[in-house]
Image 1 (cartoon, rainbow, N blue to C red):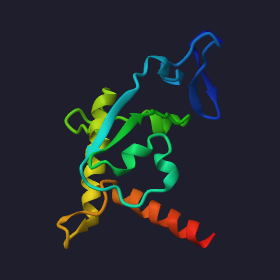
Image 2: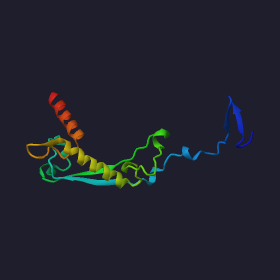
Image 3: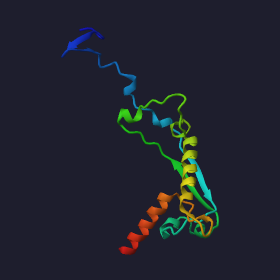
Image 4: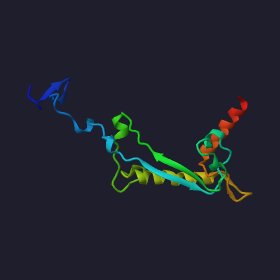
Length: 149
């Protein structure tokens, strides 16, 4: 059988390749060149009742009127090729599909801000927390479990 000669196997034509030949799709992406996107989420709204240990690195920031949270984007790729190699139409782009990690992080932080408005307090005419709603719910669960224990 030749290097790329087709062979008959159970009625299906398959190409046989030598071990030196590799399919380019089998190569995992090189993450060594992946830049780390970092940004800040800044808000004048209150954070709500965060645990005491949250402010342990900077206890002075707990009582400031402007809250500043450092954010970083970490990229994780699944080993499943179907999850990693997905194709999108050129006209149908989404900010999360961007090759620029700063654009991806900007999109995520903008959505955090939008989700924080789901905890709107109509009496004060302000957000209850500058954190996204799902963070606030997790903090409420933390305090409930902490009170129970």
